[in-house]
Amino acid sequence: MRYGNRFIAVSQLVPLGAASPFEVEAYLLLALPRSLGGEGFCSIELNVEVMLSTSARAIVGKSRVYIDLLLSSPDGRRQVAIECQGKASHGCAGDGLRDADRMTALQAMGYDVLLLTHRQISDEGRFHAIVKAVCRMLDAEYRDKSSDEQRAETLLRSELFVDWTKLGVIDGKMPVRHKTARSWTAAVLSE
Image (cartoon, rainbow, N blue to C red):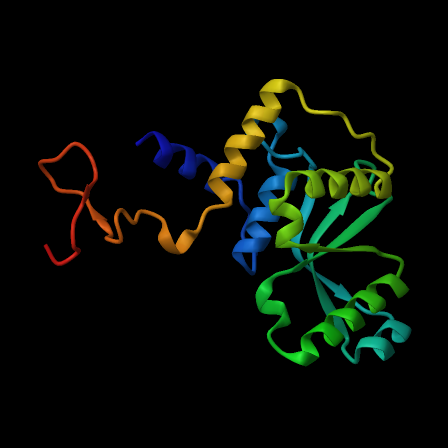
């Protein structure tokens, strides 16, 4: 139950409102305390509704848009809008244009906007470069992680970046916990 308890503890830290697993991964990496492997950003909101100004409405053709992740500086004076660009967002040809319109409208309203891809968060070096950029945008100082914090991040990343479709599969079969067994055994679900 070691991993189950950790999952339950971490799941309590994810706020409601995430629209995709990618947003949850990004949120956990950015918001969890450094002792748990995250970057420790405190003021993060998910899927924030923004009512657009008249000029921003003219750009996007909508009265409101939603920001995937909105990070604020400790004093609240600076904000960075992060738009999560998952694989699904590029399914239709028009999706990229809609994303560009939304970004431009947010920028017209004064938001600093970053596009974040799964490739960027899953690559540790790229992710750290983005974190440092966010710190600069928020006018916050970046502090290198201690060795304990680095180990916690390695563990968090190993748990976040798995093939969720194959989670629990052993030798091509889904494991079933038998009541008399003390460990998982590979079995066909119909057994």
